[in-house]
Length: 333
Ligand code: DAH
Image (cartoon, rainbow, N blue to C red; front, side):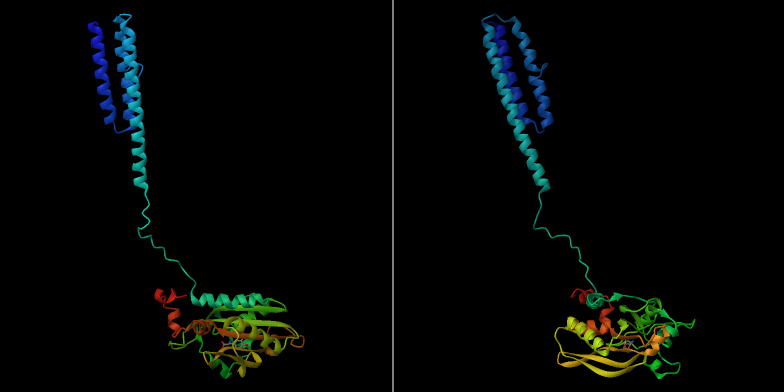
């Protein structure tokens, strides 16, 4: 054996040792690729050593050739194993970083809900729309004409005192009821008419558990040929039974300037009679005021307070709860 052969074998041996530990110590795939180039690349250390083969004898060459192949295989296997290790480690790191802790408390997103007043209005309107009614609206600031005169309140009629009116400095007023919408709608439309008009109304009332200076009403008006009190009764009955279920209801004779005859309606609720609305046949004077011929047309009207209905339906003890925006209250609906 020549010295060169011994020398070369020793160098290959050393190269393999060095490369193996370098490979095992890499911690990134990039660094591993660098090492592959350093040891096995075209200009790598193994190639450099192979150049020394030229000085070997013909018998020695196969021996070194076999050794080189072994070293090459050992390094390739080492590189591949380390590559797999590093890849696994990378995946594991990523998994750790992206792990979802399902036991962590979630971000709280409060869900809004409908205010009991709005849901009561919606329920009532749904029922009337189902009966073929159209939803109508009118202004909250009104003239004496729409709030009183056209509705057959005579100038010094005591009925004006029934409703404590808030007057504005310009002579206008804040409507005391949604009956104003009857007049406005009839002025702009010809019969047949079926409307339901929800809205805010204002009264000079002292606020307490059952009174508020601002509250809501829904007004119903139907005008057609041959409408009778029976149609009114049937409509009111269907509405109240849709809302309250199959409860007893009764009509009590009453008085309103804009209806003749007039009635108030009670439902039996929790063992007692509760007044829920006023209604009646539209007074001929009202029809004349909007230019309808009372010889051809008759009509019926009804009006009710939304707060009252909401309080009865939801057992609310104080009207002020509906306006206080207290979430502990509102979240119950
Ligand atoms: N406008 C009346 C009020 O505010 C309620 C009312 C009674 C409306 C009888 C009507 C009706 O349409 O026919 O007290």
